[in-house]
Length: 249
Image 1 (cartoon, rainbow, N blue to C red):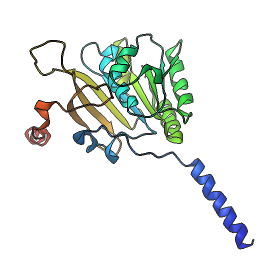
Image 2 (image 1 turned 180 degrees about the horizontal axis):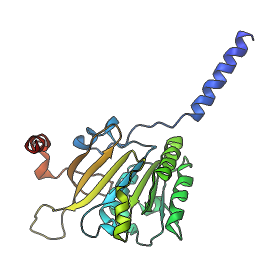
Image 3 (image 1 turned 60 degrees about the horizontal axis):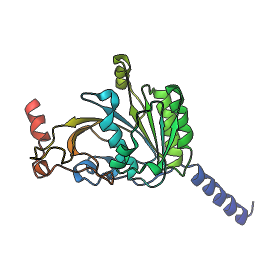
Image 4 (image 1 turned 60 degrees about the vertical axis):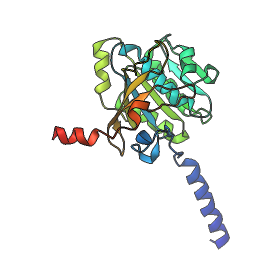
């Protein structure tokens, strides 16, 4: 074989490898040093599966978790596919978290078991910024399929765990292939003289992170651009985690 033909074949193999290679993009930062500094790469991995769980009273409605997820989707560029089987998604709430309803493509399924196939199909569309799905059940096999689909296109997958019964709630403890698992709960807000003014606070727990460790933050909820914030009265306080660990030992 002549050298010119070998070079052309090598170039063709390289092009094929690039087409078949998983899509890699820079992580999406939260814009908060304590959070981004704890995440591998300095932010939330794009083209990967992330799992969100609600804690606290009324956790079955996943209100805080939905806004947390909408804030992440709002900071990505492009349309967002939102797959759901329940008709309780409040579009003005998404707007409050920075995600304009015009950016959202709603895929309403008749049964919850149709959600995961819808998500997988959506994750194979490169034009989407993110695919969000609300499910009670997410097993290892299904989550691996979502992770592979997200890796192949670079579209971020965000799963919100929902439940109505205690047995469904217990399912969130089962292992999945999600790169990160988060738990969001309402936290007491700063006391201000006028009720109804101010920003809600959340306890944001990173329960599991591939190539990282768990951590917990108290953060202010998403603003109109999907950005979280550190509470002003907590931002300058020293990190208490080392002291808590030392005390526990």
